[in-house]
Length: 299
Ligand code: G1P
Image (cartoon, rainbow, N blue to C red; front, side, top):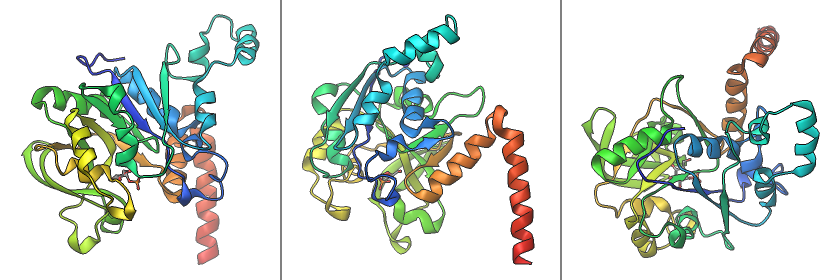
């Protein structure tokens, strides 16, 4: 785990209804969808802890109880496993962590948007800078590199400005992201002049989309207070970011998986399964067979 020079708080919004995943999200949170053998939100919590953020607040909503259960201790399982795994600490059996982190939960009672969800953490964050990691996005750093959030934190420490992780997105995906209008100020760092939530391709200011990782100064709360309902009739975080004093956009070297819709989820499954040594050969062989069958079917 890296230390991060003081920032400890991280807010993980996980209150959305998951309508793009119905029917699977009718009675279970989209953040609990599995990718290989872990729910999506576990990847997010592990990223936060690996980046040195150990004061975690998850913004939940109705039907999200299983998130709390997942990060709770389960004495029955613990007893059962301690017999099998000898001295392996319980946390390590399930999480890529030494200990299960302390997690606070705040419920968003009404679906008023991402900006509103982040605002619920205002009292907890007080005047401190904090990170926001969306609960439906996974980022994986190259071997030997820092996590996405750690890379952002380095930029925050250097410039003292809020940082938004961005990535080039194809034209057909512009309508799914907050898109920045930025000026390159240093390698991979943009000064953000403006940001628009889910623009039509004709009015998108660039192809750089916010990927769901942010570090904010507490100024963001004042901005969210001023935001009026925007895209989709919701309080958009993007509209508050536009009011910040020259926030920065950072392109990191991490791979990002957007679990916001079914194809994104399926692609993450495939790629992350292939990344696991114990499944790699078997699944690759299966995929090659599948491809051959598909080629024969269309020829
Ligand atoms: C949210 C944000 C958007 C951002 C995206 C990243 O949209 O509003 O600005 O680009 O996350 O995944 P959502 O995917 O919740 O609709």
